[in-house]
Image 1 (cartoon, rainbow over the protein chains, first blue to last red):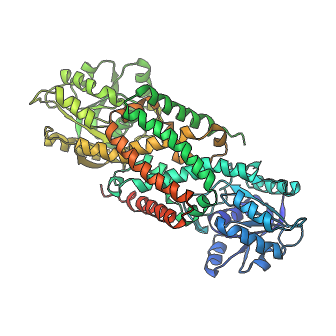
Image 2 (cartoon, each protein chain N blue to C red):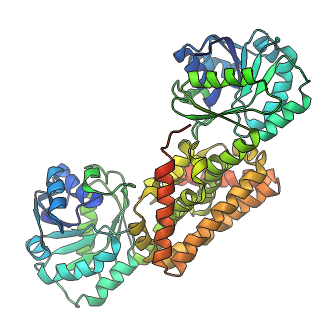
Length: 287
Length: 287
């Protein structure tokens, strides 16, 4: 397995903290440094043993790093990459864990000089939960989870391979694709479910929820996610999310029309198609 | 706790089998009889210890019963009640576990003679899973689960109380309401999530699903439910489900419009409202 000597994580919350724990657990690097904005978060991260040491400024945190991982909310990522580029040594690879890729990768490629010897490779480990904070970090978060690594005409193939091997070393099922393909894919399998889940949680009157059982709970679990974080994810992938929403609306309208029309044959066929699609493809781990 | 001497379950699948196991576990009755259509199902139910004995015809299964529970798909329930009425002794209470109530209760009250000494009380234990079959039955399925028992101007208050106490004795959080109120409530918290979940599972192309993670999996879990069973649930509660669908569509349209318009302030406010509604009310166990 690819092994980095020094890894630095900027943003040590649920995701960043789980990366730290997974690295230690899998011996994927020798030293894990966390970069923090608040002393209190540093303290919590050390208590959770998510990092070996913590620093309060990016320059000192990344200057010796072989791999820098940005695990912050998406809208901070491009400006943080710019900061890391100023302090990282040649050969350093920077990656991230953001849920959208086209906006991030394009922003970075705009300001990154040609022939730069520090590489940025977009990543999206598709794991997490509705919780936030390093207290929820777990060492097996990425085990058997899909992880998308992006390549573009400008990315260095060796750096792409190293980042892919890194996520594999944490247990991820890695797939390499373009940022555009990533954004279209996750708009369907992650962003759309969040839109649907938030809409369901918002639409149902609170009074009725008192009787709600497991079905409602699971269908809306991700609606307990952080609203600010998800607003930025949706807004950095607008076009794909809106298209995914149209796809959903079309199917839902057909289901509701079949119910309104008392058209059992059409209704059963729509429900069967949906169940088969989920049962057949969701557990097909061909990544 | 109310204790029945002899309970008969018609339809011993996931729900009926779990009722049998829960009765034994909680000592809520002395003898549990199952009524079967197929010898193979009888064998599986005995193996799962879900019933003490099994019979192949309704008349002999219910003739001594104090409580008869119909745990079959909804569209069989009214005709089964009619059959049970012909063989049950005076004082027997019949209840069910169907997911819609107005259609079932109204159908039964139409053919049930005035002053009948056998009582039908509608029930809806809101527990279950996407699986079917007695092999998935578990003794704690109803523990801490909401359970709605219905009353109408025609129901016997004593019988309603006995049925409510029965579900309580299996661990349920019981609420008594009219069939119409039940149908409106569950259209929002159970039927609508199923419509949404099936639509999501049907709309997303299978190819994208290979990368899907926990978020998609949970949001669509109930779309792996039985399509025929759910078609009948939706169709016996058409008006309420269609209204619930409209409520959802309105919220989802606002979310998608805010994304399309890049309107962060509106988007965050919609997501926050949704999260707060779920977090505040879903775990408020005031039933």
